[in-house]
Amino acid sequence: KRSASSCYVSTPNRTYRVSVRQGIRAQNGEDLKVEVSNQVTVQDMPPEVRFAHSGRVVPLHGEKNIEVYTFNLDDFDIQIQKVFRNNLPFYSWSQYMGNVGRSILYKSVHVDKGRLNERVPHFINLDKLHRADHKGLFAISLHDRKTHQQHDWKYFLVTDIGLIAKSSEKD
Image (cartoon, rainbow, N blue to C red):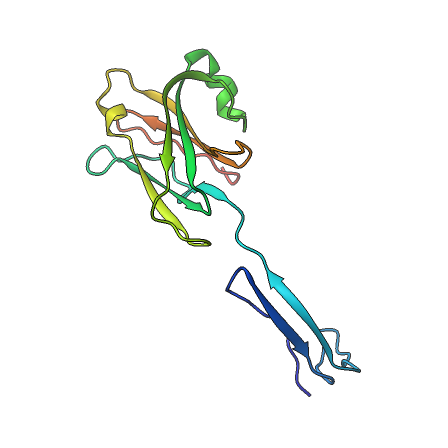
């Protein structure tokens, strides 16, 4: 007897006919008694803007870029805040990205090279922050310019001292 466990369809915005033949064995060991056939439509990827990597370290030398990517967006907004000192204790344990400091950058980015359902990379250059007199903790947020609903955020440290901090559930 034959068996199958999964199927992967990779082309969004398309309708497929999926058929499962009589006699195919399920994971629980039962055989399908009759052939089953149905149409499945794979939707477009939802609009999205996200950070490409989970790291929070911006190198001291070389390219000082944070990579982000978009799917199915025409525009997205970037906001960078310098976290106020009095918010550091709150910010160290909070998952909240609200008004935690002074806004030092707010700009809109137009996505002009993307096609439908294609991942489009973008780079945010942070060199100006490294050259600033005041270093510190910064919060960066990304959001869909039209809805402001879909967003991603993270914090990063700009410093000229050799300091690395690590947080882990195992420590």
